Length: 476
Image 1 (cartoon, helix red, strand yellow):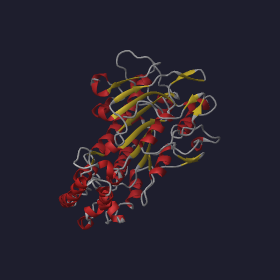
Image 2 (tube, one colour; image 1 turned 90 degrees about the vertical axis):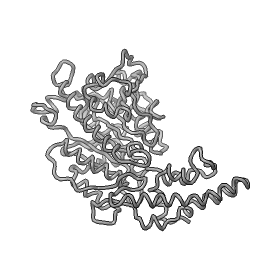
Image 3 (tube, one colour; image 1 turned 120 degrees about the horizontal axis):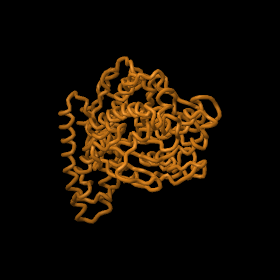
């Protein structure tokens, strides 16, 4: 019977190496269908969710992209890899380098928010209360009005692992929270990278002082017998095959010892670098120091989240970004909220400033992507097994809730097809306003990509619009 330590070891082994060397990979000599997915799942890299949430919303003409003519009544898309850098939008230009790793999602509507009617309620309350819950806000004041549990909390509970954090929640100062444990029950995040680091250091399994690299226990690795780890599966297979295949399987059992030798060699080569076999580079590094601006604050927390993912401290992270100060995006405005966000309409100079505001956020999102791509995991990178969703409080600075912009990065274990600009038809109607699909559907796609069966988030319908099911065209 496999021990707990053996199971832990299997989770560190590169999936493709294990399947290849045990003869279970596609195209191998033996019959992988007989052995099922038991070993593959044990050895596979975990899927992860990172939500990057920003306040206000971009100026749509400086955020969106078109390739030739377009029709708001039609679904269409184009490859970002085929779009010349000069044709990228002003606000999203910093993401050009990562064009094959992202999806730009255009045309969704916060339908439940529109039904809540900004004329009666503060639009910021509506945005924060509905964008991650998919449910109408509750009676109350300010940021206590979330309609239900937010998607990060739902997924965190579903992916929770014993001895690990259910989720990690980072903010910057002065932020409204979109995160809720239930109706009207807001959760506050950790608002500086130093305390955020402290919150995960105790989960480090390196065996040393908090902050030391997490590495594989080489002695346990040498003690483990790989034939023993998979012997049960081979015994089951031997009972199902003919004599010729049985001889092949028995002969192949002897070859599995080479896997153990390779793993030992990998561990020896890793030295004290903190590189875990098949599990990416796990090194929490040192505790971040103090920060003076929102931009640096968020980027410090992003490094902590990346390390937490690499060390498998958690598989879900929520990052909420506060309002930039004017100097952080080159503005001399006295009040970013009133003088820029609210005034960002066509013909007003504030629109260009809001375009620059969101260009700074795009730089941050590009940095997050680059950080995940820098961590090797199996034959790919940590981004390959993660989905990072950039969501905004509102569709734009003047409190719009239609054409809510979303960006997604990473394939989440091959679930999402990336490298595309996806425009969705605005053929619905809420209160006389043309709308595209409800943003709830995007979250349902994310939830299902992470292995959960849920077919709705918050409510299944609102304002006469069907909000259940996945968002078409995202999945491979």
